[in-house]
Image 1 (cartoon, rainbow, N blue to C red):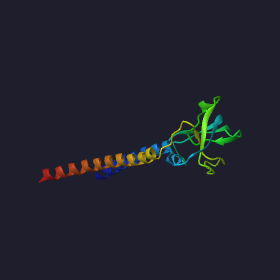
Image 2: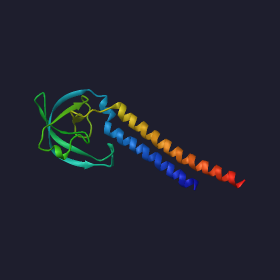
Image 3: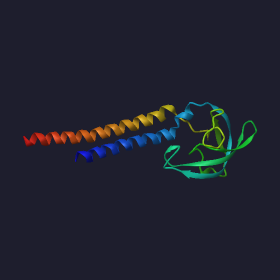
Image 4: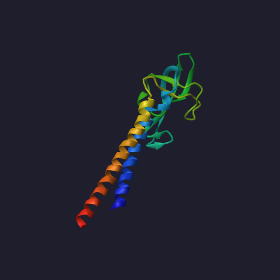
Length: 159
């Protein structure tokens, strides 16, 4: 009985951590620390699905390539950050920004590209991880505390 409660508590803790990591992936705190380097308009050319667990984190998302016409007048083919563009964006102009000068991510040779209306957040990203850990930890302690309480009551009845 004790080991079953321990496994259940561990599952609750793991669930809380996974929930927190999902929020971390969504709010992309690393992007929140980078200034906008350039802006333009993207036209999605193709997308591939990824997830639910991958090198970018937890969750399901699209990774899309797009042709971007930058304010400077140049046009480049870019790979947007996961989840920023979707197949439903095909055929429309999507305002985008580059965050972080000179930094290359996602193996595409271009700086990170995000939707212009995407607001990354360091506070929400890190808060998601800490909140998930806290919720999972409290849930796990509640399970273990309930088992310990029942065991103590059973011992008191036996005497």
